[in-house]
Image (cartoon, rainbow, N blue to C red):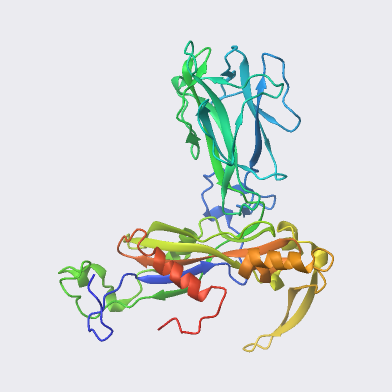
Length: 438
């Protein structure tokens, strides 16, 4: 694109809209009647409100059980003895022709498993990976890859997330087995291991599939809203022909009558759903976990006139205003209510003169005295950074927000540095001495 001049009569532009989406001051619960329930993560709560917060509990341990030797799985472990289509007897085979069965346990008491794979005997494992070489009863867990072929064995291997894993990291949440010769395919949202496994009845037809999801435990989700948006006025003159985005019929393609916005109110609402598809969330995590990083993504949106636009968005977390907590949110976010004092204040409407009461929360000043020492608080502040302002006891609270640029042109990842720059300057930990406009 040509270098644009501030004094030019035909300014060039890259976007139609700039928007900030997130949680409003008075958030709205999801309306079930307006949302299509077609995802397995979408669960209805007892109050019939849409609840995105019931994520699957991650898998924290995997073991193999030798059924031929009458081994029993430990308490709390789930046995994988049926395929995704309900076929029984999906057992692995070891060199002694014993039937091996996968069992796993869910929970939060140890860091979850981040990935699984099948490795050959001679494969060198990574530092954070482990191979299952023995079963629960201490028999061989070497899995047969090809029958009657020596040295064709494999081990089931897994890697575990670090102890300070963040809430934005993917963890193993489900495992299944499929038989392709029986017409079974890898379920939606799952990934398939490439190795074929030997099965006594169906030869080398068995595959292991697994699913990874975010580790979300304490989260409150609401309907996202566009907090601020700006429509870029269209140029009054034709851009130069040498511009890479211009054409002879530029005004016919991009202009609207009287330079009206190309998005109506409904389009703006839909934009917030594209920017935060899983809702505007208040989330808490442990002081020992790393704060979540920002995520860049792109999408395509259509307005009421069936015009296609490309969105570039950056979703990030910022510290939550703890004064907006109530008893319900404290419970959902695992915040100790004894560390928070609920108060009320009267607010006068300047236009109508009406007086209403507003409840707000105040963190007790001596909340940390019995929990942490001065050195521990310093260590927590160093790890959490700007989120230290929203820490209550051993929990840190953050809220999601998205910066978005909507354009007629598909820039791919080209706008990622710009959005990251805006995020660092507008929502960074330090105030900028130079105005952003400069």
